[in-house]
Length: 605
Image (tube, rainbow, N blue to C red; front, side):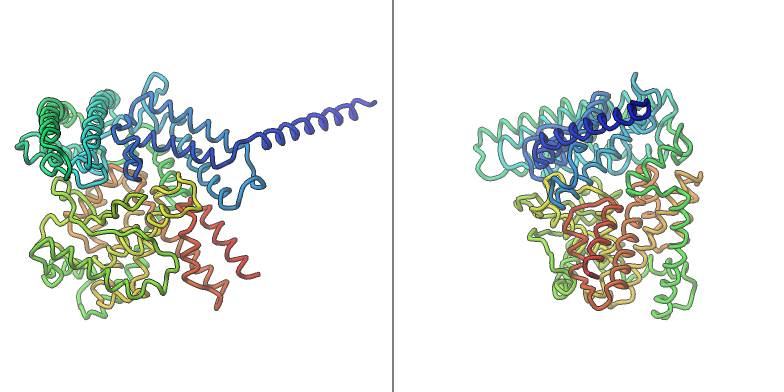
């Protein structure tokens, strides 16, 4: 036998052995549903507050110390494990729905593992030499110290219906104190390395922390569950809980806030930086590129997104000009923005309750037409509620999903810090975004979808969730609203706001823009108040890349709708298209596009 034949025979034998091993591996794998269940238990364990939010009580007494070294190492181990587990399956073993869920899980694990494997965006520890966001764990918006306070008020997702619930919250707060200790330690490391927050963001945090220090116990947000006991508790039980909460707040929580306030004021503020973007930090450019991938599920570059944003600003500006002319305003678009900011007719409210009533009236109007666009609607209910006072000044409108089993309705939170200056120009678009058919529809349908594994029920891919909600804003005329040109202009203003985000977020973190330059660009191109714009720009400074997801997701959904309409012609059914978008949960954009293109092809054949 020649050497060549011998080598070919060896290769064939090795290939055959590999194929046999692969078949044995496939034959010995457990049902994919078990992997999905295991993955969801992992996801709940690493984010117990989200588990509570989804209606699971097993983790109601814990908070993950997600900035600790041990936590990061645990993520690295588990994401690697799940990727290996998924590699044992192929598309012939599972249903098409499960295969799609596998691919979503795979994408999630891969991108998260990339984050924890890459020292640029992970913890600074003896294992990793490069600094990260764990050195800047607290900031003025979307930060754990704000979320915990919101939960502690007793009117959010943390339950306060039994003695166990009350005791669980105190245990959860013990973990929170550990997190705050770790935060101070990490921020001190950040100070040594020059990895610190911009000074403006530190300044915004100080009054938030101080609001929990010099305040009577009865007015403390964390004491409110004691002021609002549920029915069924005995006097003895209430006295014990009252004593325990008083002791915890006065002797543990408040002293920790005093310590944090002194640290921020005396040590951290003087060390905070005068620059604003990630570009000014070590490895900031690469960190931002990773965050773009994480938040948009694309490989777009910062330059590509910046240019896209600029082109969208031009396009929307032209449509704004047309509406301005329809209204009959003779001045420039910029002066029209100023007129809207101060137009008394758009600020008709004298009581916060009137704002809530106005949103409920929008809901009533949309209900008359919703079936014309949607065959798939959720069972869950929702209500509109004013944002809590402690976070209202810095908060944006938001939607919090109801519990999975339906015991708690979804909540559309509306900040109304100064009711007499509350401008309603965006309200119809805002309702479409946060409630129907935006977040409330999409997230509720996701929770209620029994064809999805449970790990896909909670809120997930931001680019899909926010992209859908922004797309939902564009459906107003089809749903019988935007009959007032001011409200339609308000929708354009909100779309412009998201287009501007593409420009200023990339400007701040990839092009060296200052906070002031970003604020001025926004003022020049949208009708928001300066106060609101400042808060938004500072949000982008604190959460790089997150704000890109809205517009990137919306443009992809709109692109897929246009492709489907053009390809299917008279066979295009908007109700069916929306069902296709919504019936697989939150998808990375590459998988969403693949799904819709396959649906379109089948419809054409």
